[in-house]
Image (cartoon, rainbow, N blue to C red; front, side, top):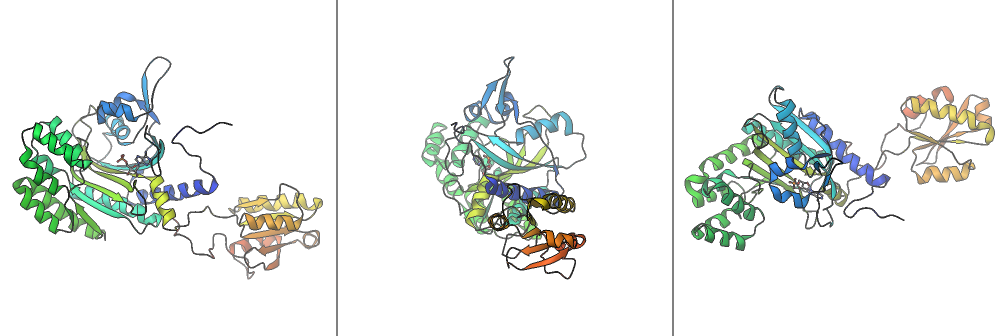
Length: 438
Ligand code: AMP
């Protein structure tokens, strides 16, 4: 027996169906917002991620050498690849460029619930449109994606990195360290670091700002604490709140502790949590950033986010959202050996008509086959019996009610679609409460 590599998972059919359900919801939402899908390689030159996130990222990645010694890395995220792609090929596309991607990422992490070494992200970016409207479009997209999945309990927290950057006007590297500590809420280390910079007097103000969370009143408080340094950011967040209201988004909080400790974030930043989850409750985050120049291109403003699909699935499970795959429309049961050719003919006729249909492959008797149809939750069984076939008909049994009726073979497609006066249910019609179809 072999074991899976640590931190990876197998997905059984029902888990795979949940995963695809969420993926479908995200893809359709992105398309509804005018985003187009792109695909980038699963591995890149390790240098790309180093350039974006600093050498520390090497510790967090799966890196390997190819046969001629190039250092490669399995992608730990998508933004670096998308911006590389933009710089090399997409920069002449009409602006704004709105793109999304969905796929697996790899990080060398300590695995736990909601934290894996292989996980899936939905990543969306608007490149080349530095505006309040792009920021709000991206936030609204993330929000709409989660709503389309059916999640009811999420918390959207919005902040602005600009005010702390202005206030902590240290050289970039020192500022980066301070913001990273604020991001991780490591206040003791923050005090030590400020002391090292002979600026311990900033500690109270900065740590208070990072703990401000709530309605518009926290913006007033930030203004009081930071003075002039907060002016622009606070005004921006107020306008953003107004803009989000146009999308019907009112249930968010301002959280000035959202820092996202990477140097390239430049303005609005946001995170989304699911209180359904334990320690790993953050389902996604993003913000406005400038990265094109860090990766060798011209300065271009972008705004985007990544949402972790695995945590969304966990959270949707917790909320009781049914993500099961669509059951079989029909399970076809030949009664006796002689009826098998006719059964396969009918199976293919129904499959071609667009139904999901399976057929007995085990040569079981009718009652065992009906048990099987029940256990796979087929909506209908189609019984192919000699007596009916002689009349050009079959028997269709509604597996939920147990009601069985005779249907002419030529009417079978219509019957399964509910197009005749027969009582056979439509494919896809739901009898129990299910999540809205993404
Ligand atoms: P990040 O790129 O670190 O901002 O991550 C964006 C989202 O991806 C997070 O909010 C998580 O939902 C998800 N995520 C990040 N790392 C992991 C992981 N190791 N396992 C599962 N999900 C992850």
